[in-house]
Image (cartoon, rainbow, N blue to C red; front, side, top):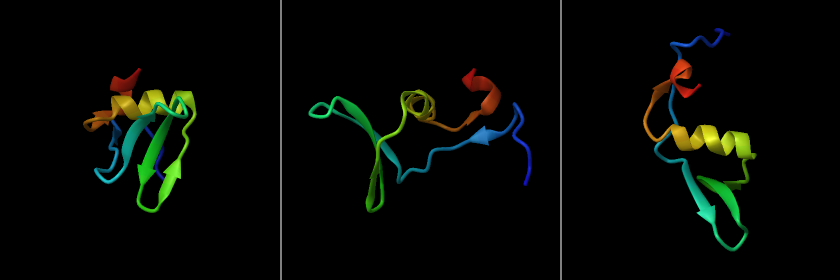
Length: 59
């Protein structure tokens, strides 16, 4: 296993969609055959990953 560095590029797959549900007032991560309810910190990171970014650029 390789350690993550500031140059590591993070990518959200095109098949994983982040959507806000107004009924539940919550963010949903939609992946094939699953619906996940990410924590607020995770949601913040996923929103920044609309395009691939280096880990150091997220800070």
